[in-house]
Amino acid sequence: MKTLSPAKINLVLRILGQRADGYHLLQTYFQLLDWGDEMEFTLQKKPSIEVTGNFGDLKITDNLIYKAAKLLEPHKKTDEGINILIQKNIPQGSGLGGGSSNAGTTLRLLNKLWQCDLNHEQLQKYALRLGADVPLFVLNQSAWATGVGENLAPYSTKDYYFVLIFPPVQINTVDIFKHPKLCRSQKPINTKDISDEQLWSNACTPIVLSTYPEVENIYSYAAHYANIHMSGTGSTLFSAFTNKDEAVDFQAKLPNYWRTELCQSKKNEKNSIRL
Image (cartoon, rainbow, N blue to C red):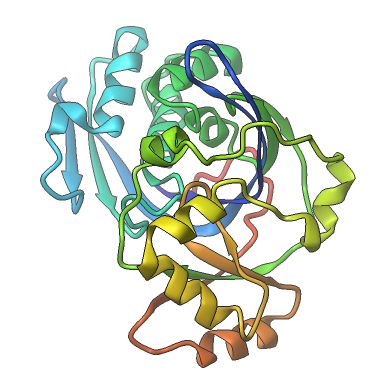
């Protein structure tokens, strides 16, 4: 069984406050993309969990895919194990939710393959244990999110073509959220305002641009040709277009040694499994 483990971008990321435990209260719109990592799940007779692919030097027991599988293992109603092969396309530290997507996709798929029969609420509880963004990828739909990102309300915008730009730098989310100059008292916007690109603000953008000159340089160059936004805590920058030719034209204006990707809004399908 093969499936897309989709990337996400944040069209809006507002910080409304901070809890006593340090977690930030957010209002964000998660837009899923029709591009991301590729995952292949193969049932095997031996009962072990195997994860293979191009995920670098990460210790297997620290991999979110493995952790997600271990959470579901006690619930499986089959003696079969699983081999999970992943082709990583989403850069690490890029603000696109790659690891979270892999974990959420694993929970959804193994719940079916292992016949765990867990309901959506049960899967979401496990997802939240793995990370604040993981519930989005169990939902598998673009959505507004509040709380620390776990309160999800499916919501669709108009379709866009997105040009993603990947600065050659990894950004630690914790570092950005700990920054003393980060604004933590923004007001929420109305749901309908997601249709106004002028309101696509990201509280983390000023911090990243002032801290990472590599990102700021790319941002400044690309902003000559289109409105530029940042996903999550970076480092990925993106621009949105309703016309594919305009997106292609913008991408062509960027230096060819930059890594970029042209993709679209992912359709809000509850089940994205491709057989």
